[in-house]
Image (cartoon, rainbow, N blue to C red; front, side):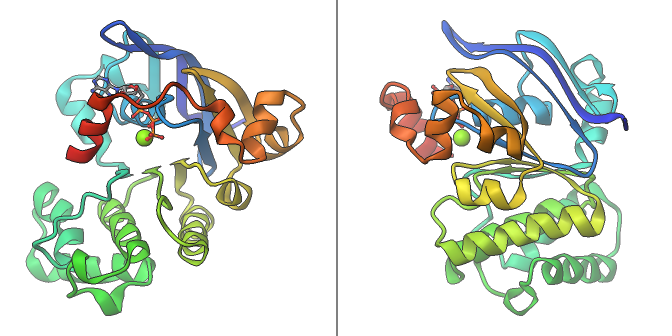
Length: 264
Ligand SMILES: Nc1ncnc2c1ncn2[C@@H]1O[C@H](COP(=O)(O)OP(=O)(O)OP(=O)(O)O)[C@@H](O)[C@H]1O
Ligand SMILES: [Mg+2]
């Protein structure tokens, strides 16, 4: 068995008295796609932030590429983070810049490469996500699916070994969703990239998942393969597979959470 790229053991995380993650443990091997599923507000984005090294767990251990990320120095962590590409739930492209300029940002920030080299690398990344023709357009001038793909191109800028995606197909139509899923699979199959994808879409899960982590009220309800998910007889897992999210949902979102999302 190869060494896991991600090893999470007994992670707990609260915000004040609100226990969001409760004893989360799982592993993921290199070159696989993990889908993290769960009702809204269940802690999926929180778990991604823990994996990124930006939100320290109250308890537990997180190893990425075999290194305990919360035992590292800040410098070591920043270094490691370059091998992790992230696409945020909100997309987070800068509206005043073209797609190409957005993709160039991490290269300008993290490397000493000259402008010509950066321009070439940006073209390669945009080509990879099928957006070379839209290089000079601004985020406001392209579709939702194109924005999401541009965010993936930016996450790819530093040639990461692992990509984390927070709801990459939220708000997209089925065709744009299928295109994102194909991109996720291509990156895995063509470049050996390890993917961690938070998603609500069962269609996507069926297309991309090797492994599945289903969170329920902050705990792990299922940690297994796609087949384990599809064949589970646990009623709450079946509800999720059948798209019955309402029955899994927590209390209505708080005003504070709503404001936080608006500001993201
Ligand atoms: N920085 C924070 N401070 C306080 N509470 C937080 C913070 N971040 C998240 N929370 C709370 O933790 C819970 C889980 O939030 P999180 O964003 O991880 O959920 P999620 O599963 O990603 O939801 P969604 O599917 O809606 O994106 C929510 O109740 C949220 O309000
Ligand atoms: Mg979220």
